[in-house]
Length: 241
Length: 158
Image 1 (cartoon, each protein chain N blue to C red):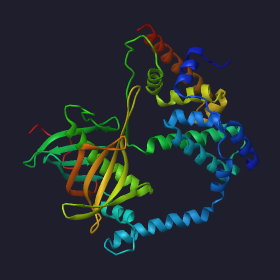
Image 2 (image 1 turned 45 degrees about the horizontal axis):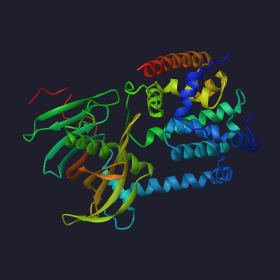
Image 3 (image 1 turned 90 degrees about the horizontal axis):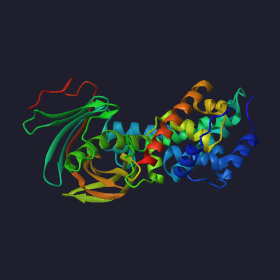
Image 4 (image 1 turned 120 degrees about the vertical axis):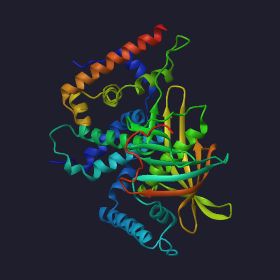
């Protein structure tokens, strides 16, 4: 006997409506017919372009914007970055998935450390009193993970060209960084990254909230480097400065 | 063994709205859910000969659909935070409130509920879809019922 609870059934009916559409079987058949070897060849070509860009990052038109941006971002798990926010505040941060986020003081000593816990850093999430802190978290985790994932998976796209403080850049959509799902709220924070048209390294970042630019999220990137495992500067929680 | 293209097509045509409904529940938006169902059936059609016939074809396809939907839900954002439900202040349990109660359940409990209620699958098919034992399905469903009933009651009596 299957256990079915009417109250639960009614509640679930409220959550997702019933659908009556029939789908598109022809589209499924067309997609399934695509030749597997051709798809493998396309994947190889993308990998080859990335290798080419890694080997010759300034090789003219040999690689596309996204492949060169991927090559420029590097593949080390540790991220070290310095941002200058729109307010003029400068922040130096270290971030490593699985370890945590370290914010440095102006004198170069550790200021705050948010160790990894429960699949993310213990960060003061969406604290209304600290939009700058939240923006900093979004920037560094977005660059370290969402942007790199978007480039690697082919989901990133070039939004257009621009000029920032005399530097010609491409803006790239770096995907979704953080999402809040709840009864009365559904916030989606995304990331746009400006890369230099000369070096393809990230030079600025802006955050979007539900598709709109979020004023607190824009910052220049004064330094962005990815480093190998073991480069994170602390083993445990540092002593308070 | 293995399924034919006609078998997969028949399943798609007969059950698409149900696949879509479960995918919406997992992914959280209709567009992503449509893509997930589409991609899952493309995979099922391509790999139909891998179906070993030791369970129902539908259970095997559900496994692919659930995996595609879960991947799609996870891939866009590295950090997804589900806001827990707060007690109702007006005595009503609105759609959003119930959605939050469901969202706050552990993932396996949610998936079992969706497959049981939205897809009307039996324990064996749910077990095949989630690659767990039928006994685990019963226990998980029981736990989800208990938790939801208690929370719904709490919301309704506020």
